[in-house]
Amino acid sequence: MMRHEARRIAFSLIFSSFYLEDEFVSSVDDQIELFYSIFGNRKDKETQLGFVLPFSEQRNNKSQIQKYVKHLVAGVIAERKMLDEKIENAGANWSLIRIGRIERAILRMAIFEFTHPEEDGVILPIEIVIDEAVELAKIYGGEESPKFVNGVLDAIYQKNMSEVVLEDKDKKNPGGCA
Image 1: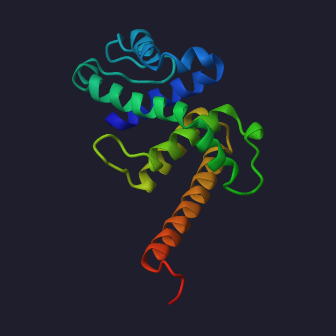
Image 2 (image 1 turned 45 degrees about the vertical axis):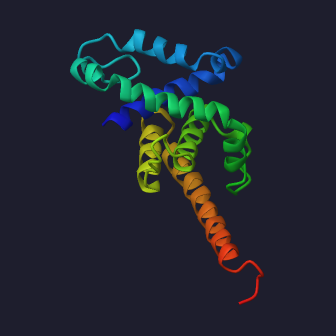
């Protein structure tokens, strides 16, 4: 539940970064605090954006949630060019400009999540990351968004896995001979 809420919060902040650009980059911590000051003070009520922040859970897990939100948001902003390249290279001639901002924010976050472990080295199973991204697309995207997000993430994952397998083969057989 903690990571699920953290992803929803991170998604909203990443999406808002499209509109704040340079102002946002310089103040990730401030943006997270602002989010909590607006949405985190409501007791057991659903916020305007659909976030349910139970008061007891907020108090107990706030620092863990904020830490994970910061990991995702700061990471996506720092690695945006690399993430965008992965999206564009996923196939089917997807131009970043033609992908909606909601889908772009979801894709960036999911790709970052399955390519960058947390400080403690935890790498989440790709299935969980993709499932969470598809759920965000169902909530915030259009009718075709979940299928699109799933397809792009699967293509990126398959491509990354084939690159890892090739790297492993090169390490085992550096001369290229069998």
